[in-house]
Image: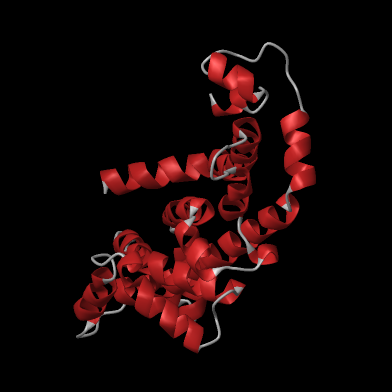
Length: 247
């Protein structure tokens, strides 16, 4: 419906919302490109999502590997510390969070927004990575140590390739909500050149009228990159889910 509506006029959308367009028009697409800073919004969303997911993968892999593969007295306590972050939604602490970021000068900046997303994503990512890495046989790393491999070499060359399905799950699980998020950019971003795609598309939502055809076109274009990402990584995603279910 959304894709079909992006080729309709507002009159067609209201008269026959579920039907295919009588004639395909690119007027809505042209309006999105000419009347908004769409390319800038798209670049901002891509950059923020990529940076956030990369940092989440890096920190959660290191933490999950340490908790899963090394035996130390406080390992369970450290894992519980990360899991406690899943119990309280970060949106409930938006006022103190905003004050803290404002004090640090991170309001209306890419880094401040990325920092929030990383804090949101790490708890569940550590949980997933720890659970998956614990299922890998210890004989692999023990034989690698006997061959003289360093700890970094074992993690990078042996464990991480085997943990690829878990990495894909973490990436998709975090990329989709970050890409679609509207709340935190609305609160933390004020400059037009820093806005993300969901925030930038609100220009078509007026107080009294809404240009639905153009809005649906923008939403279709916004959904396209994350849909392509899922299609590309779907094989690994399904593999990770089925492996986790079997193990």
